[in-house]
Length: 96
Image 1 (cartoon, helix red, strand yellow):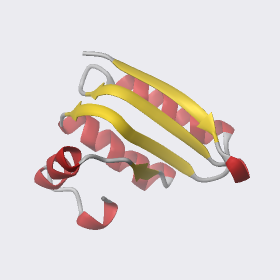
Image 2 (cartoon, rainbow, N blue to C red):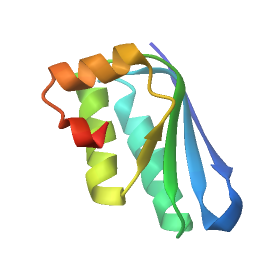
Image 3 (cartoon, one colour):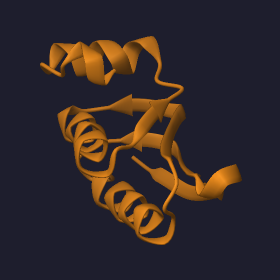
């Protein structure tokens, strides 16, 4: 399983963390570091782009929810399958 992360600066000081691959137990540390780095270096909105995430397990879903709660991140491009996985894991609907 593999995950590639990149940051893209947006207008107004915002930043997008773009994830490519699978967000699972063995890849969440890389995503966590990238999200923390983006928040540390940018004061504007933080978006997490999930359009190219093929799968996420409970660890990946937990990371996304924590990013929302701790860093005020906005999830974009979340597939129906990822949304269903998050809801099944007990994530509040208002966070998705």
